[in-house]
Structure formats: C-alpha cells, structure tokens
Length: 515
Ligand SMILES: NC(=O)c1ccc[n+]([C@@H]2O[C@H](COP(=O)([O-])OP(=O)(O)OC[C@H]3O[C@@H](n4cnc5c(N)ncnc54)[C@H](O)[C@@H]3O)[C@@H](O)[C@H]2O)c1
Ligand SMILES: N[C@@H](CCC=O)C(=O)O
Image (cartoon, rainbow, N blue to C red; front, side, top):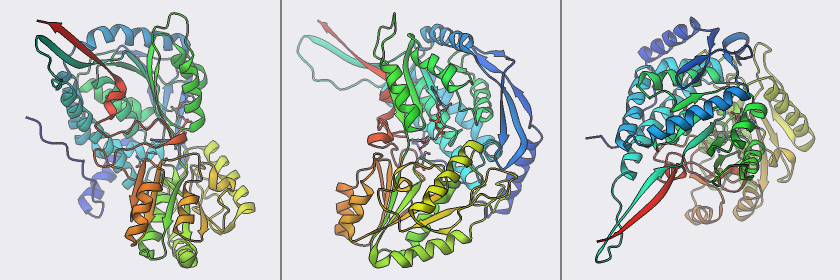
C-alpha cells in the first residue's frame, strides 16, 4: 500500500552535517567534470563528431561535459525506436509503469546532493535553488506515479439496464519532450515521466545549456530498470533537430516548456498536417511570464520588500515565475523602494559553489548580453537605483538591478527579460495596481501583499494569472500544492503537479456492450 503523496522536504543548510555532505557532493562532481556523453537511442550509446560543450556559468573556463549532438538521421532513428517501443510499452499495466517512477525517486533521493551539485555546476544554481530543483524532481516522480494509478481505476458511469459500459484511458503514442534549461532536472524530469507513466514513449531533446544533468537522469531511469527505447536521449540544435522532430508525421504530441517565441513556433509547426499524418498533434506549451508583485498601502512592508527581492533575484531572475514588476501604491512607494534597495545591496553575487551566494550567474553569454541590453533600455525608461552592470568576468554575472518610476507600458515593464532586473511602478490606488498588473500579454504568476480583505478578494477575482499568491513571493510552487501554469501567452495552462496534468497525455475510450 502506497503512502499518500508528501512533498520532499528541503535541506537545512544551517545544519553543519548537511553542509559537509553538500561540499562532499560538489567535490565528487568536480572529479567527474569534462566527461563525454553519447546519445541514447533504444539503449544504444551513439557517439557523434559534433559536440555540445556544456560549461559552468560561474566559471566560464570549466567544462562540465562534452555531449554528442544528433543530426536529422539520428532524430529519425529515435522516432522509429520510440514508435516500435510504444507497441510494447502501451501494454504495460499502469501500476507497473508507476513503479519505475517510484524506484527512480528512491534512487534520486539517495543521491540528492550529488544531483544538486550537478545543478550548481551546470546551471549556476545556488545550493538552496539546486536543492529545491532536485526535491521537485522527486515530487514529480512520486506524484505522477500515484496519479496514474488513480487514473487507471474503473470509472463511474451512469448505468443503463441491459448494457455494460466502461471508460478508460489509453496513451497517445510517440511524444517529443522539449524542456528548458532553468529547471534542468525538475521540469525535464516532470515532462518526461508524465509522458511515459501514461504509456507513451518519447524522444527527449534536452536544453543545450544543460544536457549533462539530463544524461545523469537517463542513467537513473536505466538503473531503475526502465526498458530501453521508452525514453530516447537526443541532444541537438532546436532549429535542425527540434523542427524535424516536431514536424515528423509519427509525432503524436509535443510537450514543451520554454520561451514564448519558440512555443508559438512549435505550436504553428505542429498544427500543419504532414503527409501520412493521421492525427491532430497535441501541444502542451508552457511559456514565459512578466509577473507582478503588488504592495498595498497597509501591507507588511518588510515582508513585501523581502518578497520582492526573493521573487526578482532568486536564481538571478531566471524563473518563469520571477517577479519582474513591483507595483506599489503611491502611499508606501518610497518606503518599499528604499527597503528593497537596501536588501538588494546586501545580496552576495558570485560563484554558487560557495554556500552563501544568493545571486549566481546567468546561464550564458547570450543571456548576459540580452540582459545588459535591457539594462541600457531601462536607463532610458527609469531611474537606476541598484546594479546596472555586469559582475566579475570569471562567469556570466549581472548585478541585481532596480529601476524606479517605470511607465507600465515601457519595454522593461512589458517584455520578459529573464534576468535579475525589476521595474518599480507607482499606482494611484489598488484598482489602478490591478489594472497595471493585468496590462501584459502574459498571465503566469502574481503576488499581492495586503492586509485588506476586500482588496485580497478583489485580486482573487480580477488578477488574471494562473498562480496567484497572497503575502508571499511569486516563485516556488510545490507539486500537489500549487498546480502550476499560466494564462494567455504564458501557455496552455497544462497545470504541472496537478491531478489534471496527466490527462494531457491520454485519450479516453468508452466501450459499451449490449448484454
Ligand atoms: N511556464 C513555465 O512553466 C516555464 C517554466 C520554465 C521556463 N519557462 C520559460 O522558458 C524560457 C527560458 O527557457 P529557455 O531559454 O530554455 O527557452 P527556449 O524557448 O529558448 O528553449 C526551450 C527549449 O526549446 C528548445 N528549442 C529551441 N528552438 C527550438 C525549435 N525550433 N524546435 C524545437 N525546440 C527548440 C531549446 O533547445 C530548449 O530545449 C523563459 O521564457 C521562461 O519563462 C516557462
Ligand atoms: N515552478 C517554478 C517556476 C518554473 C519556471 O521557471 C516556480 O513556481 O517558481
């Protein structure tokens, strides 16, 4: 009998033993850098000439690994293997499939710090952020395993005399999994295991900045005994291999998490029927955000300032849930701004191998350049009060940056920057604050700091986001607790970590027999 799902606890790094264990895990990973990683198709290791070189964003010179890169011929092979394997995997009972997830969760829990250490090295996550990423991956395994068992139970139907009726779920077929680099373990794992526990087989194309952590996860699935060919590991370029996989007539669904532009492109390509294609491809696309933190005039201003800093600068603002707009009622605007500037000036920016670093690097040079360009735009659109520059050249650092007095329609208030930059906007009253918050094409997360029940209820109704938080930061959704996914250009509202999520990867069949 399975225990009820419970989220994995976070590690307390104030505990000396935990710190020592984490240091040891970092040492272990440091000893394994510069490895060479092949593709894995149907269990076969395939090495190619062309490589993706993964580097540590905190230390540009440190190579994490060299990963073989697929071409279209290998993408074709991966689809064919996934299609053949589907014929067997779809017949494996749901409970058996779920057990592979539970076993993988147990293996991951045992090596939790080691996986988090890879996240520190390859993604530039601080210890706390890396630990949360690994915990969320464990949660997805435990949650989706249980949920598939629930969905496989007989379903209640209205009975007609003389007729035997039944309805049950069946899988879709071959799926393409395209995850982002910013939760390279949790989101990649969640997207992959939700697709396979429902009976589908997949081609997993990991994000090019974080292919090593995805390879480590593949090894874990193999250790758990997952049959070859259920997940096929295929790193490659988005434009060459990504488009090929999305357009392929045997692709039945695409599950994507990433930027708005790539998500829309995938949606468009997937909508075009190719020769011999028998189905409408299903697309799950979870995309970006331009999230707002509203501070009401009677809010706990200290808590609000802390929440703004955590939402804007946690993992250098590289979360779809990041609070990149702070909308403050004019009565308390100057006070909140000052508190946030003071707190921001105290943040440690640097190499995340050190336990007290709060803000690490951004993921790569292209991201750093893009963020610095937005900072130049911000200098025209607002009053620079903190940051505004890059950090040490050892890594891809950007100082946490605050712009005050920004117009709600300014570019830095409208476009997803995906870096440590927050725009302060003044609101006349609470209605005005809500109006500004909703003035975006996105609709992912939002926070409201207030002690006014009337205003909180108003926000509950009118703040148009998929994840709304009261008196807490806009980031850090927990599986099973905060079903995650947004509205409008933030995506298809698939709601990860929720009881509706697995339905994205299933078909429902009804069978009726006259007795
Ligand atoms: N809504 C959510 O749940 C959520 C979660 C995490 C990240 N995000 C969003 O993700 C973005 C950051 O991630 P990113 O930089 O990895 O996004 P991205 O769109 O650049 O890349 C996402 C994935 O798409 C792949 N890709 C790129 N071009 C492709 C193509 N033509 N065909 C197929 N695949 C292609 C990439 O290799 C990567 O694996 C931000 O916009 C962030 O808000 C959203
Ligand atoms: N689920 C994460 C965000 C994922 C996107 O980056 C959060 O709630 O902060």
